[in-house]
Amino acid sequence: MPEAANTPPLSAPVITSETPGSFARGVLDKRHPALIQQVRDAFPYGPEQHQALDSLLQEITGGAIAPLPAGTRDESAWARWGQGYFGRSWFEVPFLWAESYFYRRLLGAVGYFERGPWQGIDPFAPFKRAELRGSAVAEELAALDEVADLPLEGRDRALLHGALWGNRADLGFRISSGEAREGAGNLIVDNSALLWRHLGASPNATVYLVADNAGRELIPDLVLIDHLLHTGRASAVVLHVKPYPYYVSDATMNDVIDNLRRVAEAPGRAGEIGDRLWDAMGSGRLAVRAHSFSCAPLPYADMPEDLRDDFARATLTIFKGDLNYRRLVGDQLLPATASFADRTSYFPGPVVALRTLKSDVIVGLDAETLAALETTGEAWRTSGTHAVIQGGL
Ligand SMILES: O=P(O)(O)OC[C@@]1(O)O[C@H](CO)[C@@H](O)[C@@H]1O
Image 1 (cartoon, helix red, strand yellow):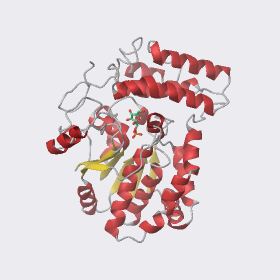
Image 2 (cartoon, rainbow, N blue to C red; image 1 turned 90 degrees about the vertical axis):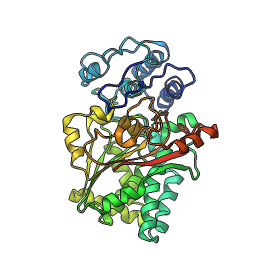
Image 3 (tube, rainbow, N blue to C red; image 1 turned 60 degrees about the vertical axis):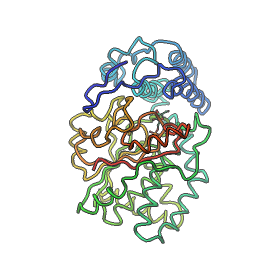
Image 4 (cartoon, rainbow, N blue to C red; image 1 turned 135 degrees about the vertical axis):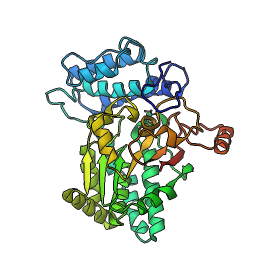
């Protein structure tokens, strides 16, 4: 098994998809082929795209990993990141790398990067759009009218939890689970008091939020951002999104615009929040960044200098979602009781992860919680029913 490069002290095997029946294997041999079919069905692609999708499907299900075509704009970056992986089976290379490269190749297959009519067409846009127009978003926006009447502590909790559990609704997750599960969910680590205390003790805070999915996750993220700005907990917010479509529903700048417009056009409090956020973007109090490393197949421990310098300016960085969590602590078979603070000690500032559990990686549990979870017999690590608000503060 490959060893982790550049990651903090505790070394543990990097997760691959080699084991039949494992979560990672299921993503590669079920979720990815199903996604190719969904994308194919969602657009009137021409023969060129269909052929490219056919050969990608063939490659991921039985072939060897091929490099990017010569002359592609990011060919050299992927040649570097994929050194030692090309020519091998998709299942035996690191899971994180294989998933990221799959999305890069899927976009390549539908002509996203090439000059031509399909350039810049987000293959996941129909799914994102449907979610944005759906009744769940409308209901969640309407519920903000009630939240507005809560005392500050209640609003803090409701809006933080909204952003947290919004992560359960991601569209990639629904490909294998049928539907994202609804319900109360289990918060198995809750460091939210530390988060509020840290912000309370930091005048003129700049909060960074590293976004995950668009739609039912990004909307509550934006609402939380407004809450931080509006209550003075933050004087500025920086929102990191993906530079191109990724992991099905990950938020890009186009999604920020669509989601913000959706909020601003809603009636009631939601519309007010949308207007304030619109103004915050205009005044620079809310800035958006789309760094290329956000789509890199690497842990944050390997982030480039410019991104490290950027995060170093944050009073607090909030990482959303499962994939960011994997990249933050390392996509490795770590002991669940390993310290979150130790695993994130390389990060240039205080961090908090808001994540529902949708893959095998988890750290920072106490032995009792872990033992109780293990006795349930549930797939608590991967089902999206459990969550953490976990801080290295
Ligand atoms: O980062 P998110 O949206 O919370 O979750 C994304 C995710 O669940 O999707 C993949 C499977 O498709 C997992 O490997 C991954 O962690």
